[in-house]
Image (cartoon, rainbow, N blue to C red; front, side, top):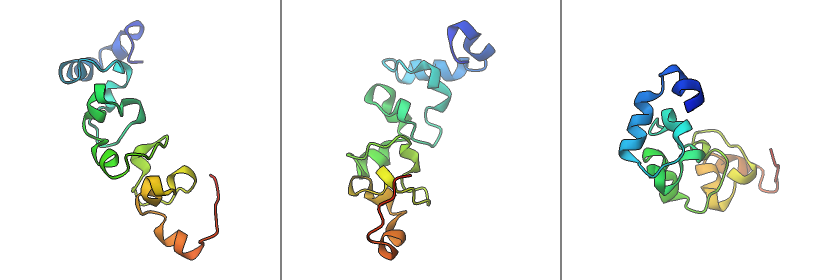
Length: 111
Protein backbone atom coordinates (compact mmCIF):
# COMPACT_ATOMS: atom_id res chain seq x y z
CA UNK A 1 0.00 0.00 0.00
CA UNK A 2 3.04 2.26 -0.01
CA UNK A 3 2.12 3.94 -3.28
CA UNK A 4 0.86 7.42 -4.20
CA UNK A 5 -2.48 5.89 -5.24
CA UNK A 6 -2.94 4.52 -1.70
CA UNK A 7 -1.79 7.69 0.03
CA UNK A 8 1.46 6.06 1.14
CA UNK A 9 -0.52 3.50 3.15
CA UNK A 10 -2.83 6.15 4.53
CA UNK A 11 0.17 8.18 5.69
CA UNK A 12 1.74 5.32 7.66
CA UNK A 13 4.80 5.19 5.40
CA UNK A 14 5.55 8.90 5.15
CA UNK A 15 8.38 8.84 7.72
CA UNK A 16 9.99 5.77 6.13
CA UNK A 17 9.71 7.33 2.68
CA UNK A 18 11.29 10.56 3.92
CA UNK A 19 14.18 8.61 5.47
CA UNK A 20 14.72 6.70 2.23
CA UNK A 21 14.73 9.87 0.11
CA UNK A 22 17.05 11.67 2.54
CA UNK A 23 19.69 8.98 2.95
CA UNK A 24 19.34 7.20 -0.39
CA UNK A 25 18.05 9.75 -2.93
CA UNK A 26 18.86 7.49 -5.90
CA UNK A 27 16.92 4.51 -4.53
CA UNK A 28 13.78 4.00 -6.60
CA UNK A 29 12.37 1.23 -4.41
CA UNK A 30 10.13 3.59 -2.44
CA UNK A 31 7.46 0.91 -1.96
CA UNK A 32 9.94 -1.01 0.24
CA UNK A 33 10.98 1.94 2.40
CA UNK A 34 9.62 0.43 5.65
CA UNK A 35 12.05 -2.47 5.18
CA UNK A 36 15.24 -0.43 4.80
CA UNK A 37 17.72 -0.86 7.67
CA UNK A 38 15.35 -3.16 9.57
CA UNK A 39 17.97 -5.80 10.40
CA UNK A 40 17.14 -8.10 7.46
CA UNK A 41 18.81 -8.11 4.07
CA UNK A 42 15.97 -7.57 1.57
CA UNK A 43 16.77 -8.58 -2.00
CA UNK A 44 14.61 -5.68 -3.29
CA UNK A 45 16.88 -3.16 -1.53
CA UNK A 46 20.21 -4.98 -1.91
CA UNK A 47 21.73 -2.51 -4.38
CA UNK A 48 24.15 0.37 -4.23
CA UNK A 49 21.43 2.99 -4.83
CA UNK A 50 19.63 1.81 -1.67
CA UNK A 51 22.78 1.61 0.44
CA UNK A 52 22.72 -2.18 0.31
CA UNK A 53 19.46 -2.08 2.29
CA UNK A 54 20.78 0.51 4.70
CA UNK A 55 23.75 -1.80 5.38
CA UNK A 56 21.52 -4.74 6.30
CA UNK A 57 23.21 -6.62 3.44
CA UNK A 58 26.74 -5.52 4.32
CA UNK A 59 27.94 -8.77 5.90
CA UNK A 60 26.26 -10.92 3.28
CA UNK A 61 28.02 -8.94 0.53
CA UNK A 62 31.35 -9.09 2.34
CA UNK A 63 31.28 -12.78 3.20
CA UNK A 64 29.40 -14.15 0.19
CA UNK A 65 29.75 -11.70 -2.72
CA UNK A 66 28.79 -14.34 -5.32
CA UNK A 67 25.79 -15.67 -3.40
CA UNK A 68 22.64 -14.77 -5.30
CA UNK A 69 19.63 -16.21 -3.50
CA UNK A 70 16.09 -14.96 -3.21
CA UNK A 71 16.30 -14.23 0.53
CA UNK A 72 19.83 -13.15 1.49
CA UNK A 73 18.88 -12.74 5.15
CA UNK A 74 18.27 -16.50 5.33
CA UNK A 75 22.01 -17.18 4.81
CA UNK A 76 23.51 -17.98 8.20
CA UNK A 77 20.22 -17.73 10.10
CA UNK A 78 20.56 -21.13 11.80
CA UNK A 79 18.43 -23.14 9.33
CA UNK A 80 19.97 -25.30 6.57
CA UNK A 81 17.84 -24.62 3.52
CA UNK A 82 19.75 -26.57 0.88
CA UNK A 83 19.34 -25.84 -2.81
CA UNK A 84 21.01 -22.63 -3.95
CA UNK A 85 21.77 -21.74 -0.31
CA UNK A 86 23.87 -24.87 0.27
CA UNK A 87 26.61 -23.92 -2.19
CA UNK A 88 30.24 -22.80 -1.89
CA UNK A 89 29.19 -19.33 -3.12
CA UNK A 90 26.83 -19.01 -0.13
CA UNK A 91 29.21 -20.60 2.37
CA UNK A 92 26.94 -23.66 2.57
CA UNK A 93 24.09 -21.49 3.82
CA UNK A 94 26.44 -19.43 5.96
CA UNK A 95 27.57 -22.58 7.78
CA UNK A 96 24.02 -23.70 8.54
CA UNK A 97 24.43 -26.83 6.39
CA UNK A 98 27.85 -27.89 7.71
CA UNK A 99 26.57 -30.68 9.97
CA UNK A 100 24.04 -31.89 7.39
CA UNK A 101 26.70 -32.02 4.67
CA UNK A 102 29.02 -34.00 6.94
CA UNK A 103 26.29 -36.51 7.75
CA UNK A 104 24.97 -36.78 4.17
CA UNK A 105 27.78 -35.83 1.76
CA UNK A 106 26.02 -37.23 -1.32
CA UNK A 107 22.59 -35.70 -0.68
CA UNK A 108 21.74 -32.96 -3.18
CA UNK A 109 18.12 -32.04 -2.61
CA UNK A 110 16.51 -28.98 -4.16
CA UNK A 111 13.81 -27.48 -1.94
